[in-house]
Length: 95
Image (cartoon, rainbow, N blue to C red; front, side, top):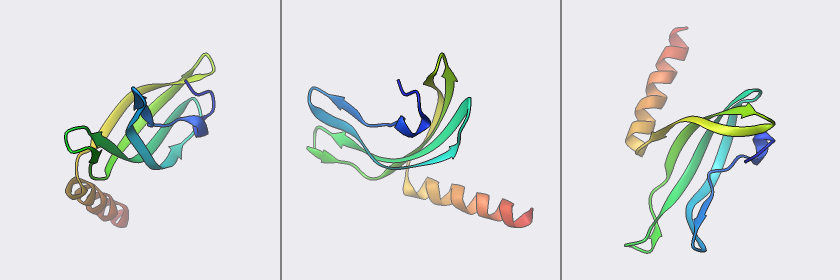
């Protein structure tokens, strides 16, 4: 586990294969609770290639000097990401 928020990653390897390839991340908040937005791709073993870009928002809690994942929300498609963006943009403009 990571002791620094900047070290947190979604990258995941299994049997020498990079299964989850982290493409980018934005740290949305730091501290005892950290929130990170990730852009990633997942390996599709049947097609032997990485799938489409995906996005995930994850919350981490620092306990005993280590960040541990507490919750996550995966944005399942570009369409869903666009809907979230549009809703947030509308709400921010209204405020």
